[in-house]
Image (cartoon, rainbow, N blue to C red; front, side, top):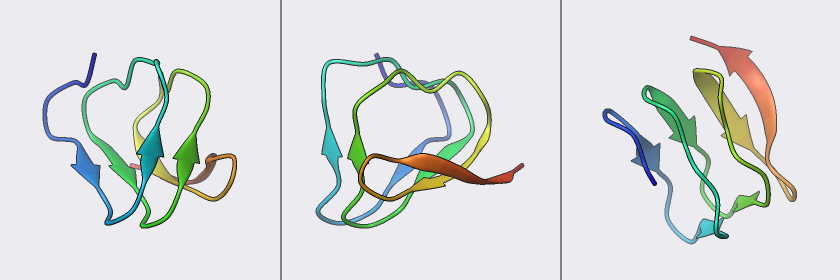
Length: 52
């Protein structure tokens, strides 16, 4: 499930996870775990870079 106000960068890979509201996922990131905290996530695997 993907929440409201979520931005997903080009080429990002989202596995079978949930993403809460207000998340930004960087281009080329790989999301392997559910994201439950608002913020900017990026990398492989995606990690929280900045809280929003």
